[in-house]
View 1 (cartoon, rainbow, N blue to C red):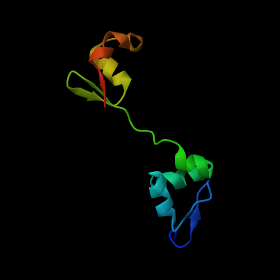
View 2 (view 1 turned 180 degrees about the horizontal axis):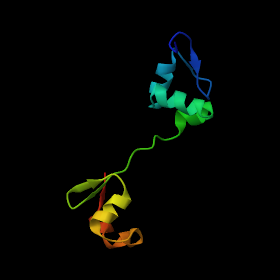
View 3 (view 1 turned 60 degrees about the horizontal axis):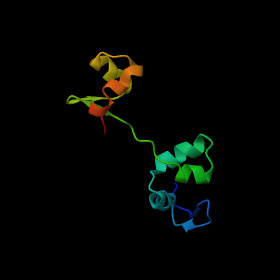
View 4 (view 1 turned 90 degrees about the vertical axis):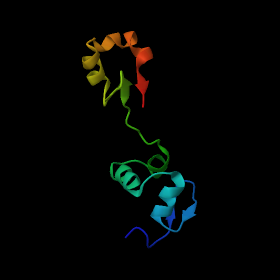
Length: 90
């Protein structure tokens, strides 16, 4: 469906397919199409950084969010500084 015609990026560079253009920018076609569907410009859809999920590692346990980590540590979220040097972001 998307492979049959040439595609041009925001700089005017031409690619043989949408897949080739997305690969050049290091993003998946689904991310590009999702961004365009949600109103992103061609430039933004191709060049905005990909958000990566952050995980917190503390005392051998991995947490999906800071709130879970803080509950495990038994301290209030605004007291993160108390354990910050022992937490690894992965």
